[in-house]
Length: 486
Ligand SMILES: Cc1ncc(COP(=O)(O)O)c(C=O)c1O
Image (cartoon, rainbow, N blue to C red):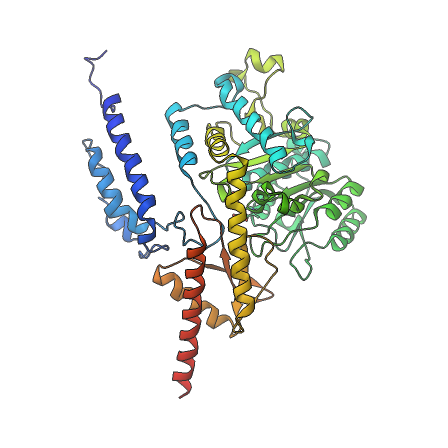
């Protein structure tokens, strides 16, 4: 064997290069603050620096890392910078990275229990751990009629929920016959766009996705929901699912899950709860009230890959009735038949989501929970919320600025009172400076800045500096105005 020609990396080469990569990552994290947070390259710049053709002969690994430094890093927006305050966190951590690496090293494809029992059983176990950690109802435990699964993203989890709801509402005929154009689902005007995409993919159709109005705090109005359901039923339509959000993307609004749940119960609708970022806050007892009413949910999803220090991608999705999900997504071609599946004694996670193949994502989640412990996770979440609340207080006290929405957790929506142009200018200048990265939304028609605190290493000094830089840019606005009018 050893005499055979091979282009593969030898174990010794792998060890040497692997050490170099770990060193590179450790150095990157140590120097990440020295880079502009938002990549400053122009469209096409990265491709123009790459060779037009692939190499005919293999190259040395050392050259790859040099090129990562020289060619790739300029095109990186540094999500792992503690000065990253844009969108929502996508935080990584040492144990998360190492768990992911180990999953790559094992190279397991865990589509069936039998294709790697540990991949399935660790996943079930860690998802069961998370149920009491987050104060979720016992019906999501694998020992009940429900259970949890790791998916790639919240988008996939919500699509799975919508498919199961569609099937349940149509007595499982839509999978066979297709949709009849009469199935409707309900979200709020603030629900994440992934539900709109799910309506497209599921065949329910965007026209049949009702966007229910929200209250002054951007939370879904249960009375408006109930009215719309009644109207749809009178029109002979088939209501299927309501999606409630705990922490909307735009403003972190928390829908009244309990009241929405009671409307769902009255009409036998599937209640799906999307807590993509904010669900993590429920690790702390003082924030657990966000989960009030989740006991009425048929499914619930949150992303450890957002705010729980677990590298992208890692989404957790629970259902109260696993049979409904499995009946919706199960398909068993001959080549996947095996004794363990036939015995009924095992979980085959391929039946719990869209795709067949699946990575061993539970490893990184397991490592993260074991490294931090519940106490460590709570500490950092608490600290992020404290920093965001401190920032909100500074905004309140500065008469040039106003809060644009309540800030219940780690996201602060605020704006300069001078209007859209001023806010756009502040944001553009800050982002161009590379000192920090902020993004925006539109609330009540007004351009609004969002400061999202949640990057793994964000500390008080970073939030203080962000506020200082925002004030500086606001001050420059004033100067520019008086210069122009002089
Ligand atoms: C509330 C909410 N739901 C869903 C998503 C989509 O998450 P994912 O990228 O995991 O699909 C996001 C953020 O992107 C979000 O904020």
